[in-house]
Length: 482
Image (cartoon, rainbow, N blue to C red):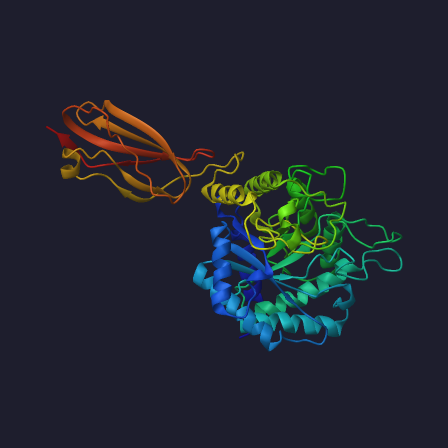
């Protein structure tokens, strides 16, 4: 049912204002189409493999072709299967709706109308999808032409804005609760209309997108969040390398990205510097060992500069740490989980092309767990409050029989301190400390400590080990030893 436009706009602004995160709430996943299989069992198995690798979100693609006003029936059936498997396994799905290349750019009114009908039909047919990304790297000639007008001005940004606007309204008419992500920009471009390859930098594209939006006079948003692809210049470059003097934007250029979005949209109906950001593609390619070469074909481009698997894991950890500390960033998706066989494409997964794990898998999974637990990086100004999600002190009978254990699970990574205090004097009879991961069953214990006789209380204090906020303190009932 079509909702009143005012209500749609109000909800969109509310979503934009409430979606900010960074920290442990980040959506952590992969951009991976291997989950798109026609049978529920197969899709569920692939979703569970993602979960085993530490991922809890996946971005899939749905490609529009000229003349289509809805996904073909076989594609819809597959998308419904993916949605069902995701719900069974607790995986969040992002769907990137775009055209396959610049020859199919939806730049005419007729093509834009078909594209937006396609996106709306997808949203209507698969109600389990709550996140739709409109377009893919419209600042590159690989996906969008023309990039420039005859006078050298930006043709792509206003044309993409027209598509995004129509798609936003069509999707929201189906369901105002769907989050529509715009942008999906590549991290660099030449901005040279006289060059051999027509591309725009994200810096130029965002500014021109804002100019076109302001000129349109629109009094409603065109996106709930901004998708971005912060690849480094090559895989050998550390993700924490900033680009202060160029138009490139990488993971370490968060401040530049926020400033550009503010310049483009602040003061309008479209959120700018407060816009939620999704890094929906970030990949580091690793070198392929000789024993796995038979599963790959072609030649690696010299510009890629793949790295050893240990370096890949380290770069992914640094990337997660950067995103973790960026307040507007709500998610980061690695590209991919499994290598593509063609060396001209991406060998950025934690699995080889044959599906076997790389040595980087364990370290990446650990980094994902520490991100969810709040320990992947120390962030200025971030204080995380740990709470016990389950807690059990020993009973009097158990205590009298020598039990000195507490059972607890922490909401985030935690440092625990277990103290036995004398109730009459408040003095400490014994104290132990330890560390635990989020959600893991812990057993803080005073076993072996000599408590003596008297009345005691056991006091458990939980604090975050990396970004400490307020400690959580819990006490047992009085326990006595004759």
